[in-house]
Image 1 (cartoon, rainbow, N blue to C red):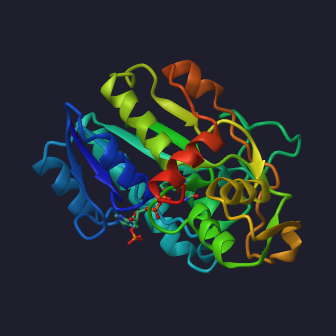
Image 2: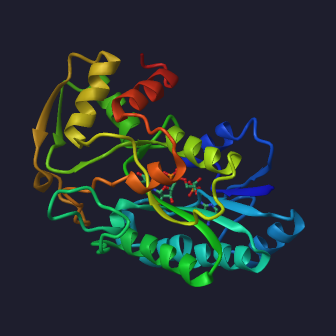
Image 3: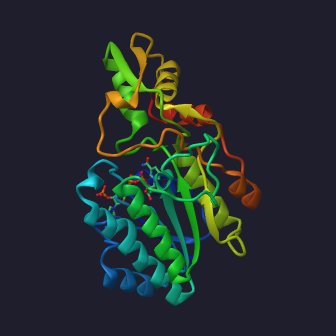
Length: 288
Ligand SMILES: NC(=O)c1ccc[n+]([C@@H]2O[C@H](COP(=O)([O-])OP(=O)(O)OC[C@H]3O[C@@H](n4cnc5c(N)ncnc54)[C@H](OP(=O)(O)O)[C@@H]3O)[C@@H](O)[C@H]2O)c1
């Protein structure tokens, strides 16, 4: 297969590059400079010129707070452009692998992990645009795998793990929210899962919507404590605090754990526990 990876310089895109190194398929890695997914003609031209059979769309607008004042731009990338990718794949009978987010939920009031059947209820612009992206894929009729994930982090770019690694090293004290609970997802594990699904040819008959994160549950406070513990940053005093102490333009869900049962049953893949994956990431960052 000829596979196009968009947004290939992002956290997930970089891990897809790594995981696909030994693939039998031919990968074309692009980011906005080589292929702007909001340019329909460019997408169609790239797909036809390179005889693309599948797209792994790692491109996205991911700034949750900024999306509140830039919803039009976020929508263009997370929804309209996703429609271009989906329509283009529908035209050639190709596959679209796409990523969405726990922000399509407003949080689960019953504090139970969200399944794919849970009613969606985004509370901010980012979640709305990502949900529209999911819907436009369904409307296109293209073959698709949509994977909702949460709390993505990696060795690349800016993310919570890297920020807290630095802050716990340099600050004497830190206040971190303990009243938002979810599951971190190491981008390396998500990329590995996607590459395995493609390499093992598990897509056919299993198209649809899935949830994926690492195993386990924690708060941002727990996540920070574990980053500091594993990296030996003993001097920083980490205190739990309430979300209300960090005013934000977006209401963040207090409980947004994704239920991965469908993903695990369908693809038979092993999902690592979040602290084990954190160890891998910290080791790659040279912090262990
Ligand atoms: N990050 C999280 O915590 C999180 C949580 C849940 C779900 N997700 C989802 O997981 C997926 C991967 O996220 P990520 O953290 O890997 O994102 P990321 O690191 O921000 O990577 C996204 C990449 O897409 C590029 N891009 C932006 N606009 C583009 C365009 N018009 N055409 C082509 N490329 C474009 C970005 O370039 P620039 O950097 O130059 O803009 C960036 O390289 C996304 O679908 C996201 O919604 C992320």
